[in-house]
Length: 220
Length: 220
Image (spheres, rainbow over the protein chains, first blue to last red):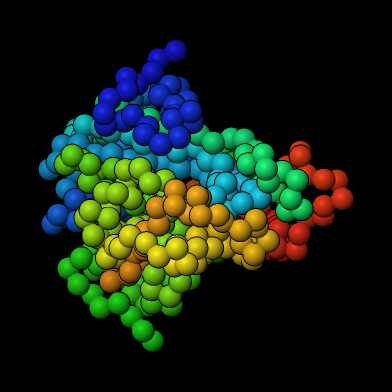
């Protein structure tokens, strides 16, 4: 089992029994979503913004306009940290203190590089689009040079990471178990609703397989 | 209409037509969730972590253990920024460039204060629990002094904020509209599944109204 070494930076300090350093488990968390939260230092203040990402092996790709303030700041800093979280349920305990959530959260620490090579940029952008919905890129009108030149692509190479996962029931004080207070889990899930066709689509154009597959996989 | 003044800090730089400074709209985004992403500076590196929050007027409350590294860092810094995002849909365009997501995202800039007064701490913790699921706190075993003393409570007073909202269909290049490529929206939503009772609950204890109401409101 490949794991990220524990360092002062990635070591989980609170709730260590829920800490995960396993590369495969962390990759699973990354691959279950496509929006990450990235912090950057702006005039001494820390701002966090959501960004779409894609992953290939130990590389995570971000993109934006050439003037994207956050991407430019990360490129200048040569490093970045990103957190991805999936909320899986409300944990409703008998006391306020033991209320919690079930979740999977991963935090990456990465070196940052601006991607300049056009072919490498295309590969990165394909990865971001296919991360959002698998197998979409190959159905699209190919990206042209003007678009490629107007897109800033950033590669994060993961140097270190850790995750926290809570996936269990209510943990209450023994002395509270007799109380007539309802306790339990309310599972939460992000689901897809029926795809809505663009109004300008030709009537005969059917919903393609990759969209139907995504919908069926995520509808409940 | 009350709005946050635009400053160098909160002004949306990219996609300004989607920028929102209206206090009520930003509060709506905050109240639609209870997990925020907070950045903090740790030895010169920026780390973002998810935290549960609750809101009362222009105050946002966080809590954790007395040793919570992030909360202690925010108290020391006397300021914090938090971002809350709701993902509402995939925007599948005819070209890679115009792929996007529908979302509501708010970023707050706040002054930070440690809450010391026990009654004020209780009010803040009630707010955090009831933000997760309304009307729960009053059904719980009251918090005791030992628990209260073991909980760090932080108040963020919002000084400035901005939001971005995308809530529209596909925006493609005119020259791409004739292409035989499927385009449209896949709406996404966080839903609640059927509540799972704690195994140790007495059989006669029915699911309370606030849990049933939450489930019914969020099941689809």
